[in-house]
Length: 127
Image (tube, rainbow, N blue to C red; front, side, top):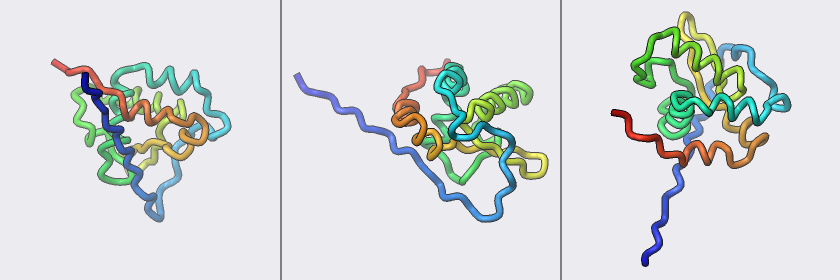
C-alpha cells in the first residue's frame, strides 16, 4: 500500500504598500476570540473568501469584484463585514470601494496553525 502525501498549500503574503488608507474598525489582536473567528469561518462562502485571499492574492488587498462571486452586493457586504468584525480580514476604504486582506500575522500570533487549516481545506465542488 502506498502512502499518499498531500502538499501543504503556501499562504501568499503580499508586502504592505506605503500610504494606505486607515483600516475600518476591527478588533485588536488581543481581543480576537476563537469562538468568534470560528463562527465567521463556519459559513462556507466566508471560508472560500478567506481561502482565496490566502492562496491566490495578486495584490495586497482585493475588492469584492476580484472574487467573482455571483451574489447580490448586499449579501457580499454582509459577509465581508462579518469577516472584518471577527478580526479575520482587514478592510480599507478606497473612494467608493472597500478592499480586504487576511490579517495573517495577527491570526498566526493569536491562533497558530488556524490559517494553515483554512488553506488546506478543500472546498466541495459547486454545481
